[in-house]
Image (cartoon, rainbow, N blue to C red; front, side):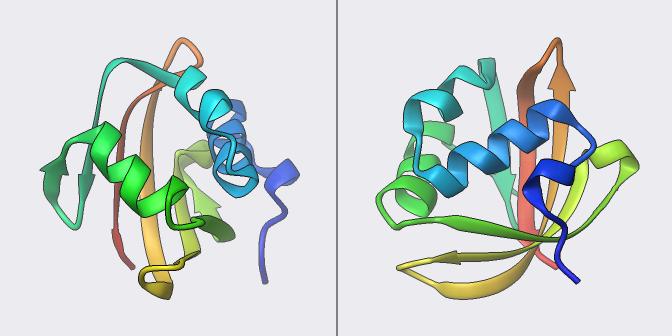
Length: 107
C-alpha cells in the first residue's frame, strides 16, 4: 500500500518528494545543502547532471511504497520517461533542513 506524500515523517524528505513530483526545480534546488552529494546504485554521481537527466528532463515521479528510519529511508516505485517504472530504495542525510546526501538504487 502506497504512503501518501503528505504523511511522510521527515519534513525535508517530504518536500523533496513533493518537488520531484511537481517537477519544481527551484523548490528542489532550495532543499539541497551546499556541496550535496549523491549516489546511484552505489556509484557517486554529479548531482546536477543526474538530477537533470533522471528527474527533471525525463518527468521523474516518486510513488512512495514505504518509509523507515524516521522517514530518512524510502522504498519508491520511481518512474521516468527514460526507464519506465522501477522499485528503488532512497536514503537521505538531512542537516538543518537541507539534504546533504541522497543515495538511490534498485530495491
